[in-house]
Length: 533
Image 1 (tube, one colour):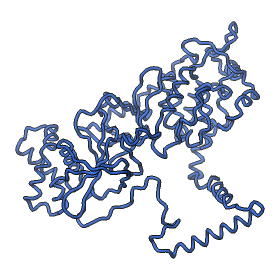
Image 2: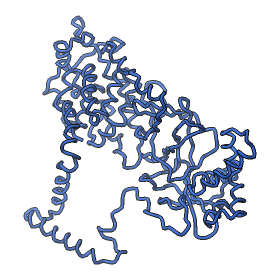
Image 3: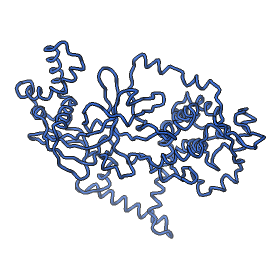
Image 4: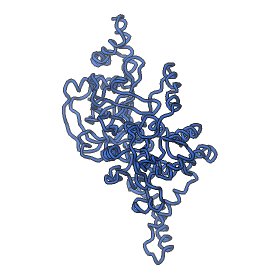
């Protein structure tokens, strides 16, 4: 983590051209003249200034980046509030912890600089996120960076990743051999000191009390809260659901509702959409779906697959209601209750915990500094085209079914973006980026999904001097397809072809700028308050 933090700070501070922190100074330019022979970056003797480098941002671009970071909203517990790290006077970030640097380097750099840096520089920067994982690519990535940035950037910290992959293979996972557990435990012992004149005695006394109380807690009744039974995760979903005979999968998914509840009645369109979605996504009802499809193919052999899909959504619910109660093929009482359809009166909630995530409805989280309303559904459309659906959580609905035992399922009502490939959603597989056109909406009325199917994403616009697009959280598992045409796309050497072309490293506008002389005393003396960044 410390290596990644130092690498991130060196690169980010150079791109942002932070005074006193950037390595692109007069001494670095002289090194370039001696060792690299990049005439594009050499000093203009007549003007006494240096050409502005293509890898550093101007004042307008830096302001755009800082404004963008200030407006970012992340899910609860994902990262610190980035707006607290911004200095809008000097256009820089300060005080970021190791995890904040990790998230920015892995998730935000590909978004932050895509519209602001040349393509060659941007491609080299986004490959940095793989540098700590891919042993065979580390030398190649370093060479690409060396072809762009000054030699002074590549100190011992940039060299260390070369050895990390080998170290991991030889020594195993790092958590078994680093110092953090001991540092945390020493901090825990320091908190036990109540008398500074008797430090050792305070620690020993507090340790004995803790051990004694822990030993006694084993003999308490189960309902008594102790350290042994009150350990719950941040986004606890309530644990396993109590099972009864004949229960089906949609009623056994764990989840925990929270917040003030409200009662309302579903309109006809909502009722039909929720009813058919639950039926088509229940594993135990799949065999009856196959029976329905076979009957339609037999009675109307000329139907296309899309027409059968349409009949399935419009006719299956009523067909299954009659089939389940007029046939001996359905013995499960709970399936017969599901065939009758849900109750029209539902209960809505603003918060739901499921799959390790905390979801907020759009209205509930509108005035919060965090964003927990982004939803992703892994799915497929007609044919063999696999696609994911991205949307905003509008309402959390608890749907109940008639008869005992009490049966309820939680649905998410979402506002879906258009999932059409290359129109509503564009996936950059090489860079693991997903672009979503926030102006286009899904044309079909299918607002509901099972809460247990949802993944959480966040959306962020590209920082740019012009209007940008909307982008979801980039660490979503993309669908993998083994079709031959996709293999050809992967093997296309588009990046290598671009890198082989000699591209100028100075700013295309030809701007000349004054550069700091690189004096160490000046560098650290001007900004003493931020030396920990």
